[in-house]
Each structure stands twice: as C-alpha cells, then as structure tokens.
Length: 478
Image (spheres, one colour):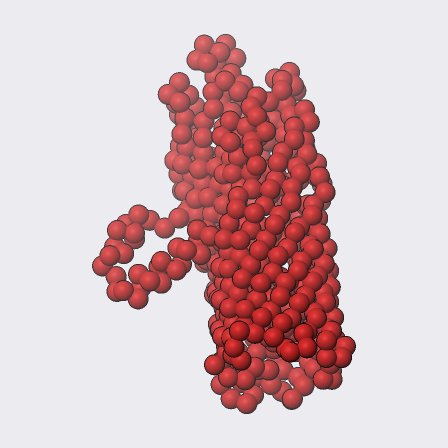
C-alpha cells in the first residue's frame, strides 16, 4: 500500500491502520495472575507468527492441515477434524463426543522485484529512482491454529476456534527503489469464534457462530523530503539546505490496532450415505483502527514541520474486511475413493480505498485500491487404504487476485492469481488419535506494477514469486 498526495502543496504519508498496545500494559504483566499471563503469551505467539498472506488479497487459507492436502476442496463438508468450527459450523452436530485439532504450518514464500525503469516525476526530469531492488520481500512464517468441538446432546454441538483469517507481512531493504512506497508491512488479524450447531434432521443441520477479531498493524516507508521542500520553499532555498529529490530521506512508522465483530452461519446436508453438501457465510467485519504516526526527519528538514505536519501524531482509519460465501460437496466412490470440490466467493470490492485521518494538520491520506470480488475454485481426491490406517490425498485450486491492474498493485501486497498444487496424508495412530500432514506449492505468474507514489515517483517493474507450505496437525477424539 502507499499514500497518495493531492498535488505537491503538502506532504502525504503512507496508509495507516492503527496503534499497538502501550508499554505500560506490558510492565503490569508480572502482576497478573498466572493464567492471564499464559493467555497473554499465547496471544503474543499468534501475533508474532500469524502474519502472512497466502490466499488472494490479504486472506490466510491455512485453517486445517487435513484440508490443505486437498487444496481445501472439502472444507464446507469436512467432519473429520474440528476445523469445521471455522469452515462450516453447521457440520458440528454431526460429531459424537469431543474432539480437538491443533495445527502448525511452516510457509516459505518468495517475492522478488525486477526494476523496469522506475523513476521520479516528470517535474524532476524523470530521473531514475536510486537504490536496489529490495531483496526477497517475503518472509518465512509459522502459522498456528486450534479448534475444539463438543457434542452437548444428540442434536446440539458447541465449538471454539482460534486462528488468523487475514494477514500480510513483507520487508524490503531500507534503501531500495520503492522505499518511498513501502519498507516494512505487517497486518495481523486474530479471530476467536464460538459456535453452535443444531441437527434439524438426521441428514440436515445448521450452525452459527460469532467472530471476535483483533487487528494489529505496522507499516513503514521512507519520505522523499526534496519534493516536499520544493512545494513549500524555493528550489534555491531547498538546494542550500541539501533538500533535493532523493538526497534527503525522512521516515514514517504507523502502528495501530482494532477490535471488530462479525458472525458466520452454515448448513450441512447428507444427500445420501456417499454424498454431502455444505454452504457457509462469513459476514464482513468493520474495524475502526486507532494508532500513531511517528516521523523521523534529519535536522536540516525540521523547517518542514512548522505547519504542524510531518510531526508525531495520532491517527485513525476505518477498514472493512470482506464477507464471503463457501459452497462445496464430497462424493464417495466405493470404499477407496472420495472426490471433493468447492467454490469460495469473497467480497473484496468493499475495499475501494483507505482514508487515514491525522490529529495534526497533516492532510487526510487517501489510498486507492479499487479491488474486485474474487472466486476461488478447488478440487481434490482422497484414497483410503485397505486397513484403514492411511488416507492419501491431493488437490488443485485456482485463486483469483482482487487487484485490477498494475496501477493499483501495491509493493506492500504485490498480489497475483495463485495456482495451488497440494498433497497430504492422514495416519491413524490410535483409534482416537489422528495425525495429518500436507504440502502445498503455489505457482504465480510474473506480474507488473506501475504504482505512483506520494511525491510523484513511479515504481515500475515486475514481481516474480512462489510459495511453499508444509503443515502437521494432531486430532484427538475423546
């Protein structure tokens, strides 16, 4: 993402999402009860680990290792592990007894920028942007999640889930060509979901749950102070101070957080003993994010702050995470084979732009996105061994990007269509203990970027990338 300027009259800054928790809260943690400190530790673990983006936009798909093995094609009709809490709460009342699923994923993405003539604004002679290509901006990450389902009666089941449905993380070298648009980017969304399911008939069940979300963000980039000086003072004055384009960089860091609430509903139907149908809906979640913008400027540029701009200040932004609909079915062919398929629609067109309001005299920051709605299509196959100890599976998915064109592609999220190729297994360790493993490789074509920055700089080039994901999961039934 980047910040947009309305002309060169006053500086504008990067997109912002909000503010992190205060250090005072951290200093009080030793006085908290042991169980509260443990909860804080687990929460921090998720916050530090769960910030990738491996689905379209900023979606995170990794919510079940079992489903990862078949490209999540069976997610809406899954009753084997407790991830049904997230994918389709209507399926929970098909469960007898209790079960818990604990999973961890290791993802190793790669995304490299290739310059194709990035340059300053024509106002400054289309001079080439200085710096390197930023290195591999993607970062390896571990993603955990946990789910619990319990039968309350013959018709009612209860579930809890804790995962990260959205997130992104990227980091460039601080002196790269696109530093005025992005250096470090982190957005993490943690989701806690209690849910209930009711079996209407032996074949048909419904479910609903709450989504309680915490959003945390940190975004940084450099600021080219030369063009900003030219907009406020004469070129001669700026030259005397060494404030020329690309000759004096400032820095801004935006941190913030928010809590939002949503809901989800689902339905599960067993058409016959071999065929199952499922559908679920997750609502949009509005986040009103509060935070701080912290600026760092060289001493020779302090005159630029006289109008109460480029100074540390509070900031606020609103963003809405999209609603989605998931459809799917599975079909068993004899004792050995099962086929599954699903479709996921996501309402990304809700994200048209992002406006940040600053408490100082800093003008509002308006960033265009113009994202489109997307579809994700997946299909998978399961093979069951003779003795029933092993299940082998594979899957393929096509995942559309919401980014409409190179003009709206951000160096923070250089998103493109994804092609998932996956494989996995289930091994029955004991009658009530299952282990799942899976691997996925995500293919992406090279994609163009031609993004205009705050001071008129154009980041022009291509991104090449791929993603490797591995996961292990333990299911315990009791």
